[in-house]
Length: 185
Image (cartoon, rainbow, N blue to C red; front, top):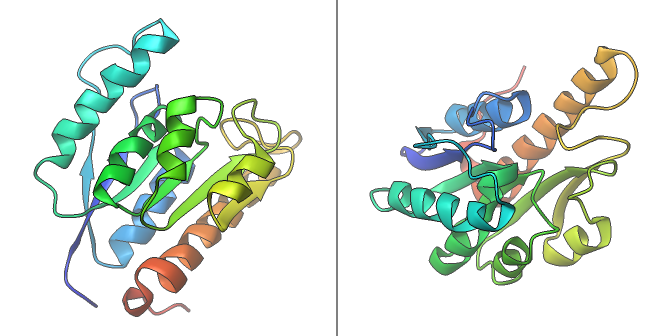
């Protein structure tokens, strides 16, 4: 196993980094030598959508100050960090990125490091063609909403979790940290 790597885990608007898809992505990084650091929102998310960007970015920038070139794992609201990641050339895993927000798209266009985009076709924030334009690493789930849940029995949404976890592991092992892959089996 290689030396510890910093990983910054940024929540969505619910403020919890333990939503299943983000939890599994963080676990995959930890299993490969990642040293996890989590952002905790300092107050309630602003009600006005235009205020959310500056509010979130200020807190994320503060969290980045003390971390040496971390991998970012961000969910939904946390994807407003795309501009910060681009400025610092940081790799990222963006889970349900807010592709309807110009500042997120701009940050992803300027990305200087690889990023994985994970989204569902039933998510109003997801833009399939745009996602593929922004990154060669895309995990798109047919019929999944913004929480990456699909209609029907819960087992179908659990299968989506397995699909996204595999995409994260493949991205980490094949793109970011090829020598850090843990033994499987």
